[in-house]
Image (cartoon, rainbow, N blue to C red):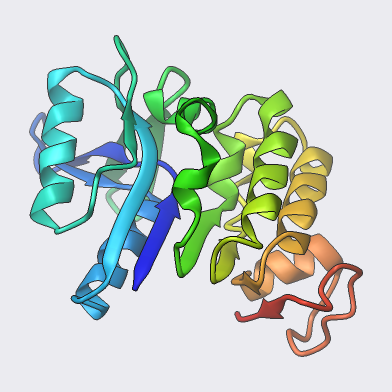
Length: 221
């Protein structure tokens, strides 16, 4: 089985003291790739992204390989760098997050895929992406990404999509809703949370999926 996961991996800094931080790597789609590999050890799990050529990016790539994630589709970006986020925990145990990702090389995943050829997706059993995969793109690229995945649908086993709505990444709630609805109509398997369904479609009962475009899409929450 071949699974292609398209998205972003970031450097995570987690406070372990007043001025000390532990470094790791995470991202919604990357985390899914790791869990898939652990659950399906015999599967070829590929992480499709764009990655810089700095020391931090190289360390990130080494971690992927240690997790047995295939990085053949992690396209290099000359002069690029990795996105970064910081987790701090307050006195009451509540976590707060700060992000630095505007210049992340991962934002160029679509341009690099088009450059190298979208046929690289062909033959995959599953292609998986998320709302964040789209949100980090240039706004003008999002529709093109959805159309590319729609074309790929006839060349792969299944397209799976997790909306994972994060409104802070979008210009407006309206843009987020329009883009995510289009992505859901282009996939075979949708994985919205109950909150996503309520926000996107006003659906409080997950079993009641009657929005247009879902006649060929299985929805799991």
